[in-house]
Amino acid sequence: MNDDDHILGDDHGGGADGAGGFDGGVLEDELRRAAAVLDPVPDVLCQLAVEAYALHDLDARVAELTFDSLLDALPVRGAVDVPRMLTFQAGELTVDVEVSGDGLMGQVMPPQPARIEVLRGPGPGARLTADDLGRFTGDAPPTGPFALRLRTGGHVVVTEWLRA
Amino acid sequence: MIVTGSGTLPSTAYDDVPYTRGEFVDRADVGVLVQSAVDGDASAWKALVEGLSPLVWSVVRAHRLSDADGHEVYQTVWFRFAQHLGRIREPDKAGSWLASTARHECLKTLRSLSRLTVTDDPQLLDRISEDGSPEQSLLDSEEAAAQSERIRRLWQEFERLGDRCRQLLRVLMASPPPSYQEVSAALGVAVGSIGPLRQRCLRRLRARLDARGTS
Image (tube, rainbow over all chains, first blue to last red; front, side, top):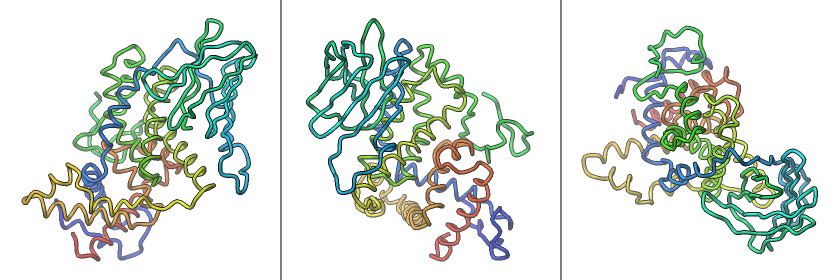
């Protein structure tokens, strides 16, 4: 390690762009080694990311998030347990979802029955059914990353992954 | 893999790569790996995870989320990447895609938290000094004690930098070193300002270490 890697050049001027011959590369490398020891990617997370390959499904359409009350709605002052409202869209199909402490409620538009899986990760998820009017409910509110996989009219649509 | 020479590259897409050294992973490989993963090659996916996980993690850490939030953001980013694989318009920029998605999710988390509570730093310093992680015990072996102390001081001074520098350096120290494009996507900072900022922040850190008598 080069202990002579001082910042002497910094004393005159203090310009913003590297004047003075100080090569930060050595220090940056030290930081990189420190991060690898003190703050590495937790193994369990790396493993989950590897397993996430199972979520790669070219046959499913992705329903993109078009509304999220977390971003698009004004906060309600003092209200702590407001339901999170989400809207996903894939072509003609819209899925409205409301997540609260009590669970999950949703509506498929245009109204149609659907088999729905609440995904929490690469493994299988809880199964729900949307009735003929496209309405569905689930008891357990999702926490953490989740997505809905809907099978309806021969199509498979998966909502964009996000955090509940 | 394209071998990038040292220092005298012509103006290419690699302009934004500030340095080339040891374990430099050529980002051109990323596009190839993405395509292979789309075609069903699980080992290509694994290589992507191994090569880009530290970048995603760095972005999460740069935003100082709690462990629980950070873990969820990290997962969400990779789940979404798997979901969008094959639909990503510029596969060779998958690193930037991941960095930008991670940033977006971090900001969303911070925004939702700010509605409820004032968040505080997750006490990283305390955790480092008290936590006996395997890496830590390894470091504490006798011959490594001095090195351990050095790293600890370096990390402490890094943690005490201002938000902007701490954030930038935390992303830059991902391994392998991210490109400036990726850093830009991770922090929402213009590519052109990263070089000067980096230099300034590293100088500040050096000055802190020198002031402390550590070199």
